Length: 600
Image (cartoon, rainbow, N blue to C red; front, side):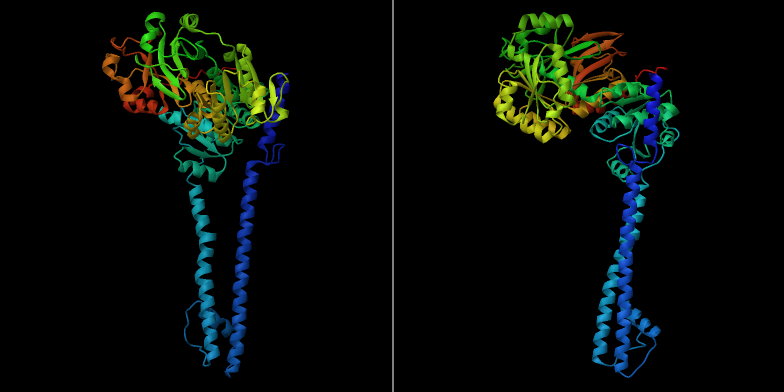
């Protein structure tokens, strides 16, 4: 069976490497060549038309010159007629041949104006359009390199440029990890270069491209295109650089095995990752904690306070650290995150973000959990990959749910689907929105997500709404529209890929908020947290300190920090960037931790 799959992969990659049309459409190089040929034909046609117009003007003016000179009783050869026409049209006007009649002089003016208009306006236009502009365009195109310096090593090699890759590049730049984006289209490469990104031009199905990108010295190749394209990339790279890590994304579950056989030793399904993350943010209602991630040995959990005795209390009143040993990282309240402080008042819309052990979370649930049937039912809007992944996560948790989907062909079963428009109140009622404790909005259109978030918040002011965002700039809009948590494909995807590359370094809590780890800055070694003022200087809060393999959650602010330890912090993207600026050497010391490529 493995041989059969291997043969299939070879056939697929062979087709993708050829210049013949595939079942998926024309090869990108063929499309570009076709466009360029059409542009050259258009330019040639324009030149031919202008040349014909010019020749026609000279012929007409030379003929009229003959006629008018005959009327004045003078005769000139056709060569002289053309000579006079050209000198007059170009405004040279040597004056050796002139008309004596008024009609001839008026004709000279007409020839002069027509010639100056055509030659002094049209010819520069032709020169700029067909000579100068193409030269400048080619000069711009050559600004994108075709190879990397031979000394390049330890770099990330990206094969696409989209929202996920953009977020990944930002993480790499912040950690000062070298990277390069391979772009097939030269014009797109120039645009990407002008955005300040490191790019290289090359065909993704050509082994020479990867040799020029120094793939043998790369830390990891990241293939984030479609499944056939990723298979081709993985197969090509594994042939020429068998020791280099290859991470590929899979859109279809059936592609996972094929990608692994093709050579990818990390295969991630970003839709499923985002769906599981969104499902985790929708649980933890009614005072019941729910783990949203495990980071550096700590369990990071959320717990809603709606319907519990916690509402109206301050964190000092609860005393969770003293009584249960639970650390409060911060409090979410309708998209606003605040670092935990003793006088923080909890409202019905508040969500506690905690770090604790499994036993401590169980003790929290035993004391504060309020069973609520509504909290065990959810409405999922959108039946795509993300929506189905959320449904699978809810199934595992025993949460009842209904998926609202407009396209009937996406329906997987009859029990959990409601076919119709989510903007229709009757459709949402049929899906059970009136009893749901959580509403998850998963479409890939941000405008639709904002619209539905605002609509659902109006219908259910007390429900927990988790929305999906495609672009980072729409995150704050979704929060303003009423979302309790917002996650994006780019944010969760880039965090997952980054953790494969750098190990357990980042946990995405929500879009724009991360738990991350960093070596102890030299400036903080031997000093206490109380005198270091990390939060005041960076707006990052220290969650734990790791030293000698032992993690101390909620560290005592009066105890000196170990020189050889690591800090575990929580902060926004901006705060994390500020931390890197205030303590520039700390993040640099994090060396890639990706595991060595396993042999097959």
